[in-house]
Length: 62
Image (cartoon, rainbow, N blue to C red; front, side, top):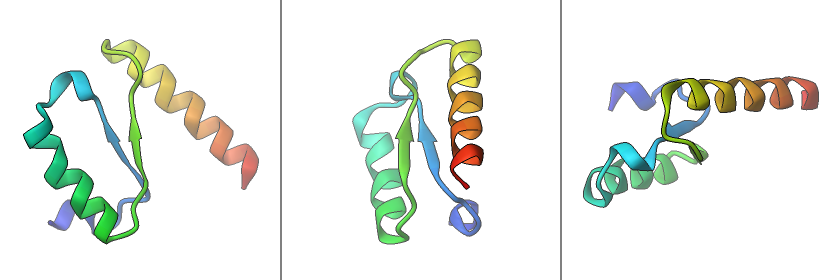
């Protein structure tokens, strides 16, 4: 999949996918050593906040 070519990490909202839909993504990410992260909230705004907070934490660590 071309979408995985430049991915640093993959984010999945488990509320939005069935297990059979998410497993191929997770397996492909594993074969390419791409970390998989999961949103802990279901709303778009909460997910955006979680992603922004993760990005801030990452930038501080680098």
